[in-house]
Image (cartoon, rainbow, N blue to C red):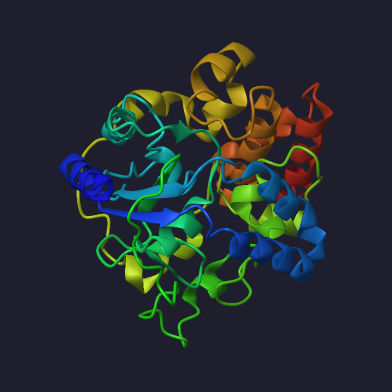
Amino acid sequence: MLSKKIKAKAKELGYVKCGIIPATVFDEHFREMDNRSNLFPNSKKYYDTYKEWTSVPENSKSIIVCSQRYNRYQVPKELEAFYGKMYLFDNRISYCDEGRVNTEFETFLKILGLEVFGGTIPDRWAGAKAGVGKFGHNNFLYDETHGSYIIVNTWAVDKELEYDDIPEDTNLAACSDECHLCIKACPTKALSEKFVMDAGKCICRVQFDVNDALTDEMKEGMETWLYGCDACQDVCPKNKDKFVETLEYPLLAEFGEFMSLESVLAMNEDTYKNVVNPRFWYAGEESLWLWKCNAIRCMVNSGDSKYHELIKQSCNNEDKRISEMAEWGCKKLRI
């Protein structure tokens, strides 16, 4: 009865929920990616990349799915307009409680005699199929207690286990058909209808895109989000008052000196590669210039005159990509 042992251990370690499903439930997910490529042809590259990036290991038989909450941490006021909460409280960081729990749980699976395969599984889809949450209109996974402030963890293993029933409906029943707050709040209109998203307009995607030049409309629409975006989650009624605890996330206060817009703009390559990128890695090790461009955009969109001199100075940056972003800002602000 390995499944019972696995779920008992998950409960002991403090996971919110644990479900186990066969490793054969993802064909529908990949078909949905093709559907969205057809629906948003300009964003096809994002969906194609996602399909290449995510996979179900060839020899896996079962997927073990556990969820953790990150709404127990205090959100620093000086960072909440710039950083998505999930990235601030990333459960993949080894020195946080959640990271240590994930490591211990995987070790336990190996002790049980299971081979654990590497790879990147579509976590939210797995979570919905395993019953640990349901999709809201904004495509985030929700549970009834913590809203969308949960992170799904998955492990592909080599043995068939006892499986949970796959829910007939993976969409949030309590999400009213009349509620379109997340769609209205989406700054770049990536959300245009419920359960649908144009990845090519999602701030969390395009702010890390080093290939495409952003239109002026997109630059303005991205507001002051430097790393991540919480716009659709912040307005969701199902998330109201969900951040009710005030624990401090390990080392976040100490890390704060590197996270302001001014600090990013002044950052050198050594600090970026050795301090910032290991903690916030989505842009890549060679993309300090992209962080600086995003910081300038945030300064411009903030409307705060205290940034004007820094924006003007950046027009002389030797990196053309940075200077062009600053020139856009000066033109927009008429400074």
